[in-house]
Image (cartoon, rainbow, N blue to C red; front, side, top):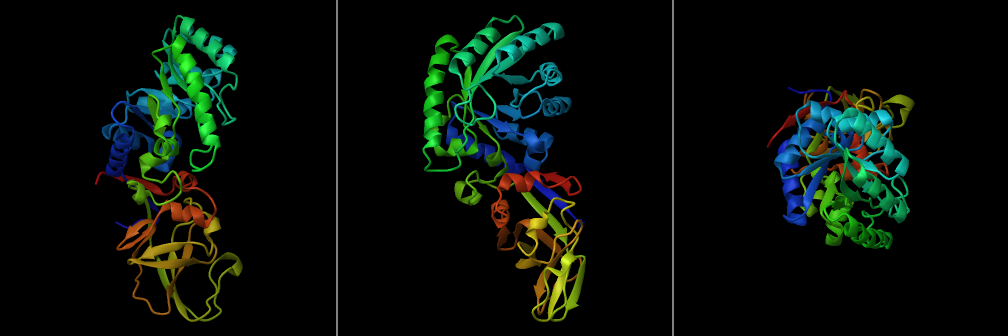
Length: 372
């Protein structure tokens, strides 16, 4: 059955990508699959289960509500909430048996009180800001103080030490190495007082870039879904894109020279041609920035998107002669015959990253999951 906007997610690819990552890090390093933001648009519950089946040991999210949702669907794996928490968020995370991240003494004390009141044991990771400049403390002494508060609290357990890299995906820069040095030095000191903690730092690019960044665990997000962390070719890195985006040709019309398609007449035929209307648009997450700036695969061939992307439709130049019929499938991300359009290619068209392309696909584009 053809649909106007369908996101297909191959859960088998998610499993295989986790196997590929396991091959990169080896058996002695834990793999944490990041499934925040609805698994980067792929579907958090489905992808969490697939990642665990593929060899992931932990899961990570950004918000307490995401942790609650995973637990509600019966996912019992170790689960880390990486983002900032309000008091209510912290209680929700604790009650969901999710690990939380702390870097301020005041919040550590408040978390201890919340755990006492709830009668649950809270699992805590301390975050050192080694150079990202967002969350965490830049002060090693404060990080040590927070760890002592947690370790001394009756209902808290010190589980981990973490940081996050700012430029791991910019190969050849010096900043990644500096962050790694700062964190490695501190981790050695931290382990001196707390030898059993899980130390983790590397995201997907850090995982591929330097084994020294692996520590006890890596936190991989984008690579789990077969998207390239360096915005290059995922297949060259042994990754398999899990997501494809589909629609169909709803109308085929003859255009004479000078006739235009779409709002604002931002495209007009330079010669007689056929134009197909594909019922997908920015209401589905196919950005208006793709106006005159993308290709669509139809019947195994690339055709340029022409005219303004509207909320519900795009138009595609099928050429002066065509055998494309109404109802023919259209692929915006994915493969058709020998042709392939990757999320990385699409992202380059509008000067963004693959993360934003998949995260930006809206709920009206129905998700379909299968294992191939």
